[in-house]
Amino acid sequence: MPILSLDPRVNRLQAEQVSDDQGPVLAAGDHWPSYQVFHQRRRGEKHSSVGIVHAPSSEMAMALAKEQYGRRGETSNLWVVCSADVLEMDYADEDVFRTTPSKSYRDPAGYKVNEKIDAFKAKNQG
Amino acid sequence: MMTNSNDFPTGPLARYLLQIADDQLIMGHRNSEWTGLGPILEEDIAFSSVAQDQVGHALAFYEFLQKECGADDPDQTAFNRPENRMLCNGLVEQPIGDYAFSLARHWCYDHAIRLRYESLSGIPNPVLQSLAVKLQGEVKYHTFHADTWMKSLLQGSEESRLRMISAIKEVWPLALGMFESWVGEDDLLNEMGPNGHPWYPGEAALRLQWQEHALQSLQGWGVDVDQGALSKLEPVLGGRQGFHTEHLAPLLDEMTAVFRLDPQAEW
Image (cartoon, rainbow over all chains, first blue to last red; front, side, top):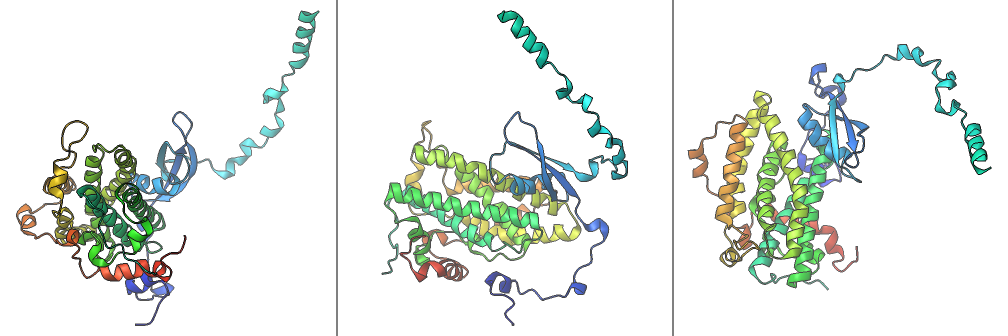
């Protein structure tokens, strides 16, 4: 048998080498769906989106997400949500946000209270 | 100079811990053979992580044996013992086979470890007690991971179901061998835990607990278990006495190849 690899594990597999066009063909439905993973560092904090895993069920998604996203650093909890269950806005509708950056009056920084505070302080000290 | 750690640490507790450590070392090494070859990327990472945990558990027990029982340092204990001084069971020695076999073994093995750690968490020794509690968290994930795959494949397609069932049949006699009785078992049986009860139930009791849980799970996943046929299967024994299946020697050769280049090297 020819040596396929310097890795003894690969040789043990005794797998036949297949070219790309001989490989298995998957139908669209054969692919596992993706699940969005949300990670919570400590109890009480919010869950934040950290990435996806592919899995055949939400339970399996959780089993796999634990090692992909919870094996380093601090973790208190994980959520997994099937990506198909997420309602996504269409990028074609991105124009609904076009004028938002110019509406600075909606920014709390637009309220000028420092003059009033200074006046109040001056009055109470005087 | 090359020395072999020929002497077992003395005492039944040390021997029991060495059995657990050797099981974890060899199981972790075997499972790590899937790294880079797993069925999908996410599972490759998850299963590799389980393997890494298991080698870590072996190290924790080897360290305890060194500090408290006069054993050699963990590297020597792990990598410099001849085959007949290893105390692992035949289940962990088997080659990885196909993924169905590796999953069935993972499921059998980690539920047995779960039971051992549960009993170990009742031991009077506070160092071991807290170690057992710490490691239980990782084993909880290992069993969740194994259960999820078993359920998924047993309730998947007809092919996945048949392949899993055939893997379970192949694994079963080897799994029963995990509970081989061993020299010193009776002494450990009489050791009391802090609550005044023995903390170690003995291999026969552990085997019963394990089997009851395994059969219950299989039935829950819709497998029609022929208990009569199962009870006729002979356990594969010998590991706890240093008699091993033919698969351990080549594994040790490969696992210790780098270590043997310079057994005294600092890593």
